[in-house]
Length: 153
Figure 1 (cartoon, helix red, strand yellow):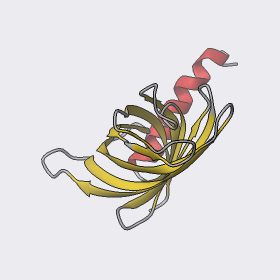
Figure 2 (cartoon, helix red, strand yellow):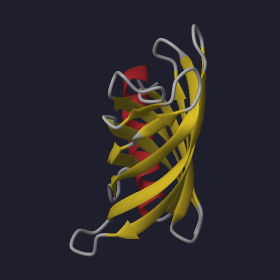
Figure 3 (cartoon, rainbow, N blue to C red):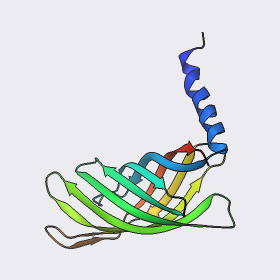
């Protein structure tokens, strides 16, 4: 019988083999961002459509509960395979202690590793809050690390 400690290593190789031969549509992971934003650090899920566009949801659980939804457009950076830049926008709502509602823009770079089901992105996501006081927060920079779920082409 194989020791349980080898199971995660085997699973990584299995998923890596699947990812090498499949198009990535679903990505899920964590986002680590600036402290002063409503939706900055938490869990992220992204769904890619076939046309270079995606939707992303971010669930923030830091000190308040907040949910953001973004529509993103991806463009290749031809000099580096699997590297793309992206932009988009969306809205967010937050609860706990005080309410938040606003809009957000997003721009960044995104890299999908070849042969490994890991995606990295670095983005800037300014927010404009409308509840309690109109407040523009421009300082959000974040890094996201996601598992890329393979799907058939």
